[in-house]
Amino acid sequence: MSYTYSVFKDETKLDISYVPARLIHRERELRLLEEFFSFIFKTPGKMTQRVIIAGAVGTGKTALAQRFGIDIMKKAEEHNLRFRYIHVNCREYRGSLFLILHHVVSAFHPNFPRRGFSSEEMLRILMQILDEQDVHVILTLDEFESLVERDGSEAVYKLTRLQETRLGMPQRLSMIFIVRSLKPLESLDPSSRSTLQSNIICLDAYTQEQLVDILNDRVKLAFKPFTVMEETVNLIAELASSEGGNARLAIELLWRAGKYADAEGFNIVTPECARKAASSIYVLAKKSDLAYLGLHEKLFLLGVARLFKESDRAYATLSELERAYMIVCEEYGETPHSHTQLWKYLQNLAAQGILKAKVSSQGQRGRKTLISLLGIPAEELDKTITQLLGRK
Amino acid sequence: MTFSEDKMAIEEILGSRSRLRILKLLYMLGELNLSGIARRIKVSYREVKKHIQILETAGLVTYKRFGRIKLYRLNESSSKVKAIEALIDAWEES
Image (cartoon, rainbow over all chains, first blue to last red; front, side, top):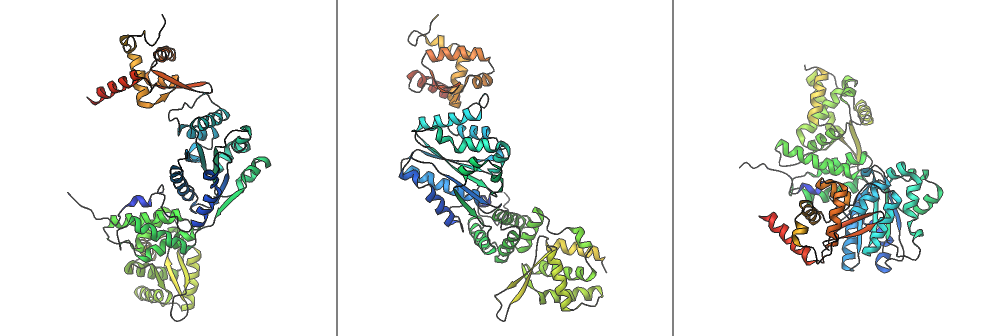
């Protein structure tokens, strides 16, 4: 039996569907959500609630709602309350209110037929089921924009004004709407809009430091001890931060970097693995763009590529890169350009998304500029630039 | 011919291949409407309706109405249903 070493301990902890037990940097929002729905235990059946969670891609909207759902189900069980949390991604059901409601009804009656009903009838049937089973539900409509886009104000109105047609009956259906932005809701008519926008939780993009915390938490859960370099985590956080503070992307990059380490037979996940992972997901720098760089920009970049290729580091100072550039110039028989000129090259390469320069405050004597290579593996960059320069 | 629960002989009920298949299907899937049963056992809607009526009269199936449709399920309070379930289990296990 052959045994292949893996840096992973449990890679399912990096899966998109994994809901972490602790939502790092979303604790406040989770508490707020719990507060909004605390009435479920205090006065069940007496009221319902509608909450909007808004935030860009990868800001933890779905994880927040799902963590809340798992926690509240557990609490309901402790309180002997008949309660269900149902999470539906509207896009999966092409934004159709009917299909979404059918999915919800199917949570209670798995073989419920699809044909022959309108969405109003499906809504009535859902309420009949909730009444008969004496159950309370929080229904989360994830990617709610797709429902708004497809079925518009009427669908939203039907959902949100439901309780008004059930006067004197227990209130059973609360809702959480997840949207990337509040903008699509502006297309709704005023009455539908007014029923929605009461409680809004806005999730800001994660900062680079927050992404580092999230990644470190996942590293502990998913990787064997000491297999992921701190610099790898920092580089991934930087990459994801430059893509709008996207934690989902950060976690995917971490997983891919681990996969590259396994494929190469490394027992450690290096920054180069992270660069390979990034270049497999999205193209930060096109190879064709490299061809248009000036000779000394290419030489400088070749120095950068070689330094990172040989050192397993994510960051280097400008003086280190300058030394690497000088060696390359010597190899190619070129007179090195001045430090000021190199600074300009650095700015240009950063503007093109090939390199990233940040000022470090950790230096003992003043501040240092730390440069990282984004999105292109150093090995690939070395090969491409060498080809473009024509081997001497 | 009328069907009443105590008058129906076991061979009358279980002697039909379609009725046995319906009972087995409901045991496996929990509940279904008439069209769902017809589609799965590849028998016409009319046939299924006839068999379901017999099973209902015999007290073996029950239903819940949702708007225009009925979802049929085995009548779990019937001792005969429990015996049929045990029979299916024994048959499937062997």
